[in-house]
Length: 354
View 1 (cartoon, rainbow, N blue to C red):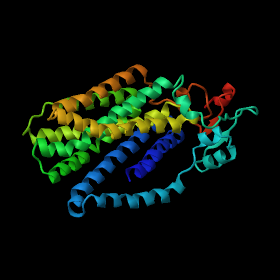
View 2: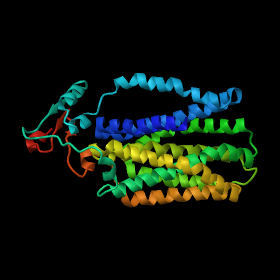
View 3: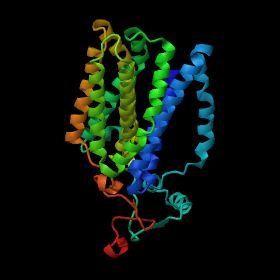
């Protein structure tokens, strides 16, 4: 069941952010993508934890599977309203379809010269190119960032209710309610994350949240048995803010780094890196907790990868905030101009004015 659910969510999310990146003007791309991801993550976690606290004691865990049925059907119904990316269509040489989609938004496709052509690429090579120059270092950097997030989210957060029960002697209902309430308080922080990412700096905001989340874990490490419930609640809120912010930025950032032919593949690889933590994290943290009871060692052992990921991003990451996708690519591509036209980069200067 988890595998089937992962096929759905893991496949859809990178495509959603690739579409947003390719169809949104540069000045709005960053904050809109992050806000979408942040509210989706926080809202989904709030709904899931709230449903667990409310329904699980009555109907057991099986009821939680059924909650995904109506949302899955809704996604199928709404998908027909999502247009194909004009950039992708141009890249594939499907100019007529690109014109049709752009006309829906009142945008005109303007070739700059008669000999301008769209580029095509052979199929089956995209994945290998992600791990070759000039993208290999960027790919490894964002994947390590995703892995570090996944270790904390799936390795620490998923064990937190059990930790609260065994370590602080909370009953299971109170522990789940704490997570639900913390998610509710963390949700408004998505607006702050979106603003910082879109209007301050994408790279520095990602580093800030990784370092901040590591600091929260270090604070968890100082809690002793019978510690203050108020402090635990505050740290849980801050942890959810940090984790929600990190994952909300990871997918938008990763798709901005790659050209059209690699964008969805790059986003998919990055998203999969965050899921690796879901495979490794729970069992790894369980082993650490068995060998070192308490919060100190488990929390500090997960803070370390976050700091390493922040350092790697500082050294190798790109600033994407406010930049057009063409500015971030190694080779020029057709672009959406502010005058609502797609112009090929070979256009004379007078064609690019305005």
